[in-house]
Image 1 (cartoon, one colour):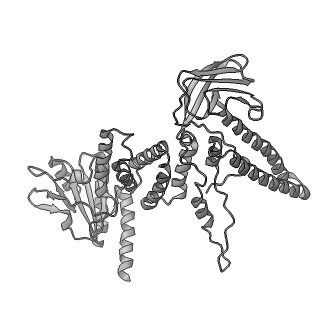
Image 2: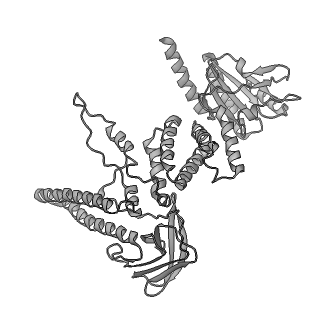
Length: 474
């Protein structure tokens, strides 16, 4: 859980809004005393990244002028020279002048043409001065005598109250400004002391639950300018990665919560939805495809992204979600009907009577299959007396190499494939785009696990066998 001190809440992040601006053309005049001839860049954030917006030369007096015939979107920009970000500023107009120096960039900042930048630097200057005092007192607490330590502790407490009061007053005075919204965006909940239970004990989960419940307090999801700061990306990713149990059901609840709030601003919704949908579509973690399917079916396939994606893109995404949906953990696996090695008898997945069935789709020409299939044979010999069966399907239509591999490695489980004039639809049903594909099913053919290595399969099998045995003993 992450908690930031008020004294170190000073954050230097790039922000650009996405609102349309009637005025065309911009001029940003900057004088940074202490710099000589060089190249300067105007940069911004989008999601987790930083990008250049403009470039110009610096003269011998540290002067630089960024100009363009288009308009800068409202938000926070950064001046970068020599790979160093010297300072950030707000753009609320298209003509702004900034003057400071390399020694005390924050304290000496002079602003014309941007009210947002003025109040932003008032805030930064206040915190900067209090931080200086706080650092001195923190050092005294380490090295001073008992009296000095006590005095330093008192000063720090007074400083903390002063800063809290200043920030509360700042938000009250500048309510609705981008600067106020940005400062709120980088704040984290201040967790109070946990209340005692009736028996005097303290709930050890209180701090986490409180932090999560108040994590988005004061975050203005209607302010689309926050998209172009690291705050929005970092905030939503932290909520998912650090404050949410990493199982599909919990993740879906948290994502719906974020997306429900993000609906207040179309750009924020677009970013959050596309980011998380892409993330979970690409995830290699077992079961995360359920999150992708949920997002696809409940947002994209319900028309919420029609303005952002082409019809072809939406069709492709929908096809992918529909292909994965029947294969989600907990669902009954699609039936498979193939022929045996002699191409005479039909073999049906649903006809297998076993507590656990391993569906294994493979190819004798596949490099991974050549390694994993003999390992599956070893596992089967170890587990077959414990209610485990293997339904192995050859993915190729030419079966001679497949049959030779079966004989060579004594694959004594159920082996079937298409061939000759018969062709089943298991490749479509099981979304077979690579081999091997491995699924573990229970006695009702519901999917317990999937797309795992044989080593992982063995551990998962052991877990479910033990669970079954314990339940049978009751």
